Image (cartoon, rainbow, N blue to C red; front, side, top):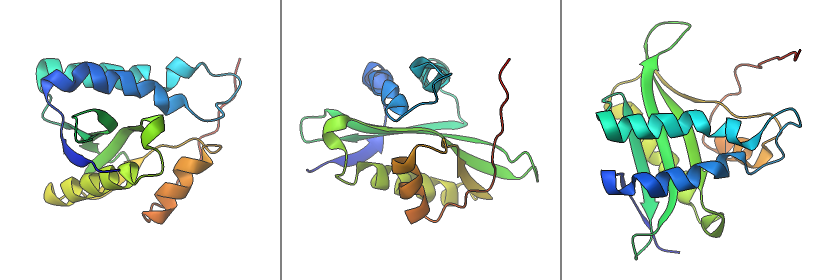
Length: 154
């Protein structure tokens, strides 16, 4: 499968939003609703395109017909532990038909390149413990699983 990575433009907004539900395409915890996994990212996407947020970058993978195969949302913020600039992958989603073709890997490579370009201290992301497909990819990219979030529901 041939594709290229490029920065998303305003006319890509709806296609990027359409991909976000893929963020819940793994065995989600039974107490969760699928839309919880992507609604916050949808807000970021809309803000990015409406307000041209300088702290957010959105890349897309497109095929030869300009069909979007994947997207990555990257936001720069302060690391909560050392207050240095951190790049955080807010969302990485790949269409079902593009899975296994290197789309996620190339999007992560772009995120790493931008993190270095901006001289950020680190690149972080969050992943659910039972999302083994994503965790496997992140391990291949050298991400350390640094924190464990515990939750008690009432």
